[in-house]
Image 1 (cartoon, rainbow, N blue to C red):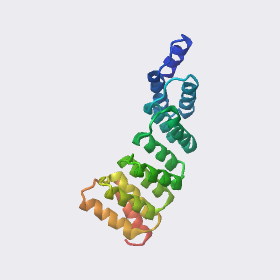
Image 2: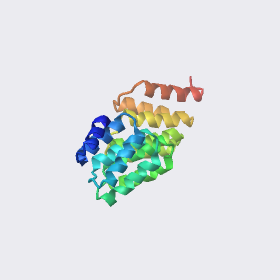
Image 3: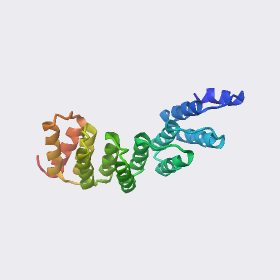
Length: 207
């Protein structure tokens, strides 16, 4: 994709939103954060119209590269380009902060997206994962509760992250309660679910 884009530029063919979008998306999927950002910057300099798809791809590239600051920079620059953020761009930004270990910023950002009703199950899961990595099990539980209150069905990812957060904080009773809920609600359990629940019991000496 990059080679074709380069050939296009060499032949002085006019680049469009579609061609930039395809090239940036290819870089994002290939884990080429730096190249994706170079193309995004070139697109801005060339005054090619930006859209939500392009911004989402650029933010996702930052997410995969754990570059949360650049992800937020792109997100907050969207209104200047008259591009409205949506749940996809918000989710990518939260995931970037989660991967960058910025759980507090992730939760602040999450709160704004929920208030604006731009959230979905992926948004909540990203916020829970941010709490899980920081061992903030009470925050993870709060987000899980808000998710249910907003009539979104928690899935395997939601419960796995929350149970793992409890396990890291040695809150084994809560971890076991959550595991029991997955059984009652027929939520699919996987190796991560069982491992986190067993580990919580092991840390508490509940053999």
